[in-house]
Length: 165
Image (cartoon, rainbow, N blue to C red; front, side, top):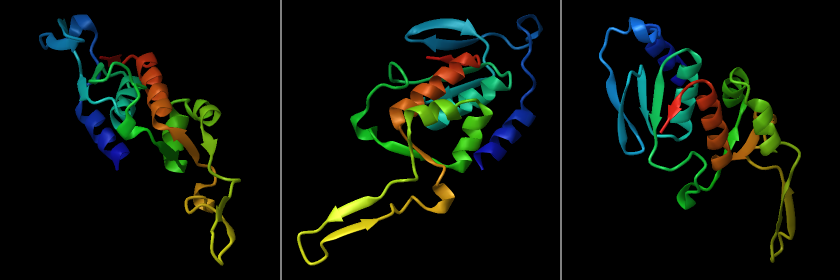
């Protein structure tokens, strides 16, 4: 759904113009408290996974993208968000398109090949089972910490030309 929406947005937006061909006046953006004049095609508020993925996609398509985030950097620790993401086939299509899958595999944990063992103090004893999410459809999925995913997305978005503030 997000990819379809992004496709519609890109279809509506004119291609990125060269600085001399811009018809619109410069717009003010913020750079950690200091104002400066700059034209942007897209301003994204929020440097979570969705904001960074949007910045990466749009910058890769040649749009002038500025992303503003309240945290100092993408991988800043947030106790209330210190969890893992399961990057499945659908997510890997995105990371494949942007050359990130190998880095994610190197820094994450594969979803297959492990079991959960529970030791119960009653008659159930020891019970071993496959994790609920370790089904065939997610066998190639990768568990990755949120901070690591955000760091990789931020690096890729910046490399694609997005301005991260």
